[in-house]
Length: 233
Ligand code: CTP
Ligand code: CA
Image 1 (cartoon, rainbow, N blue to C red):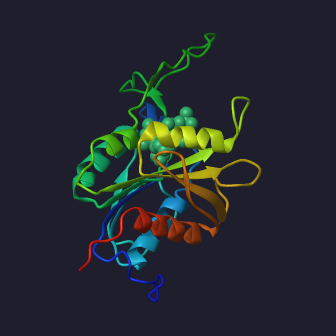
Image 2: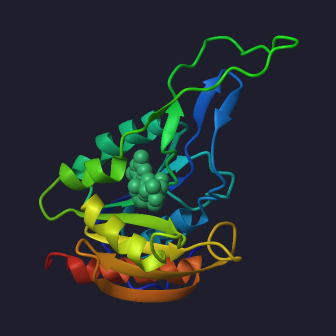
Image 3: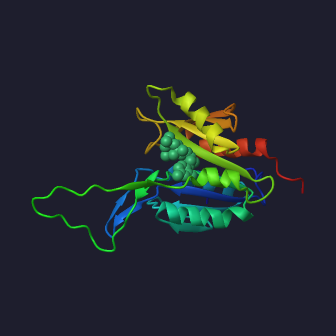
């Protein structure tokens, strides 16, 4: 299966890719989540495996098929995702965060279901900020020469366009590469194709790509090879 004709240019690279979206428990039956399908991350994992890498996919709440992927770790919340990434990163040559990580989580999660009280409105849910896993991975490199890649689904707003926000984020995160994906108007989330610009830690453009999630995935791996060519055998 996959693409057996793919160039084996990632042979022996150890790669960890996160995909999907984290869910933060409100109580035992409810959560705060997001609509990430995980398809771009799964495409990255498949592409790397087809190109010869040893890949671990860390999947958060995926409902897409994972057939053919050799090593899958399943997580739910941001805390679980963070724990999995921090434990896998020390052995990885490349770490890619495509997962949509919940920025906030409920401050308290009662052990029993929250009940509604007749005649009373809902109690507010207090939120606290989650740790920034990508920034942590970028700061505490698992091994020398490790390449850390982030993804950013961006929209423009009153304070700047997609590219302004994307470049600022690249500088803030400290990742070697940030894949900027403009979303909205039928782009990005839940669609079959993507259009991305890959920037470095200074926010300078390294590559642009558009096409299927697989084509975008291959462009990301090409950019990783440009940043860090594999050691000569
Ligand atoms: N990310 C992460 N941990 C978080 C939030 C985000 O590791 N707590 C990672 C995502 O996996 C992605 C990158 O950071 O690779 C960018 O995510 P994004 O949500 O765009 O960035 P934020 O810093 O959360 O900024 P924003 O306020 O735009 O959501
Ligand atoms: Ca965010």
